[in-house]
Structures are given as structure tokens and as C-alpha cells.
Figure (cartoon, rainbow, N blue to C red):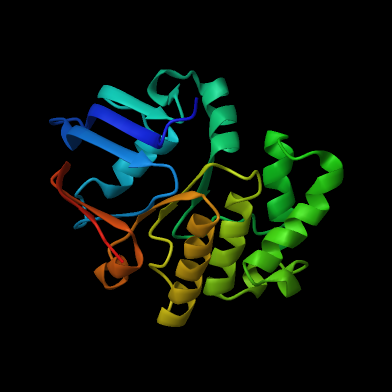
Length: 232
């Protein structure tokens, strides 16, 4: 039976071991996110925002505690199964797009499907077209990333992140390099995904956009200091 809870962190700490003394990026974090929530994680630089996102996606492993996503103990997965699980379960959007520069926008989306194999091969072309239409850049399908504006590249990155129809979309500062118009376009896409039942978790330093989220989690010094659900 599927539970309402999609993400659960219990007693999670994360330390990085520099030569001098360990740096504790996160300290005993307990947190849960329900399916269909639209969540912003905010806080000053160094507060642990990106570290938290990296644990949820399995890009980092906790020094202590457990990370469970859709019933899977992410912290316990070995590298091979972890990569496969991540490709099937989570779409990741980065601040600097990370599109492959020698491939067209459509090919970037196609590649995400080929690497995971969730979408049947005969359906991939149509799905790529659908996602580029949904993100408003279908006319750029044959263009290279360098031929797109920053806002268009970010929308292409979102299309790629959605290629395998993930349960969860996470984004690290997705509007940090965009002007206000393109930031609003990206936020509109996220709103549409949540309305369609997706869970969206976004790290952002832009408190001006906080009102666009249904829930705002604030970090400071590696701990959750505020967790506010916004009522319409």
C-alpha cells in the first residue's frame, strides 16, 4: 500500500573530512515530505541546503541516520543499484543546466531515456516532443544548448529531468541564473507538475519566490530551524 509520505530523513548528519577537522554540513535532521508537495528549502550559503538535496538523491551518503525515498533505503544502496534507482525515481535539475553541449536539445532528452530504459524505445521520440512542448521549447528541439538562452536551457534541463516520468523532481537553485520572466516560467512549470501529482523539492536562496511554494523549510547551520506550510 502506497503511503502519503514520499521522503523521510531520520537522524541524518553529514560530515566532510578536511585535513584539519571534520565539517558538519547537516546535524541530526528529521524531515518528511509527502507525495504531491511543492517544497522550497531555503537558508544562507553554507546552511546545508544542497547537502540535504544530495542526500535525498543519493549523490552523497549520510555520516549517520537514514534516508528513505518511496520506501527505498537510499543510504544503503550500492553504487550500481543506486544509479538505476535514481534514474527511475528522481529527476534532477541543476543551476548550471549541465546539458551535453554536442547534442541537440531533443538528443539530450532522448539520452536520459536510453540510459535508464523505462520508456520503451518506440515511444521515446514522441515523449521527447511532448516534454519539449510542455516546457515551451518544442521549436528548439534541433538546436544545440549554446544556441539557447539561459531560460530556454533551464527548461530543456527540466524536460530532460522528466524524461523517465520520475515520482520526484528536485532542483538546486533552478532560477538562480535567470531573469524574473524566465524564473516565473520555470516556476509555472513546477506548479503544473505539482497539479499533475508530482512532488517537487527546490533549493533556492530567492526568498522573493518563497510564496510560490506550498511549504518552506529553512535551514541554518545544518539544522531545520523553521518548517512552514503556506495556506492558500
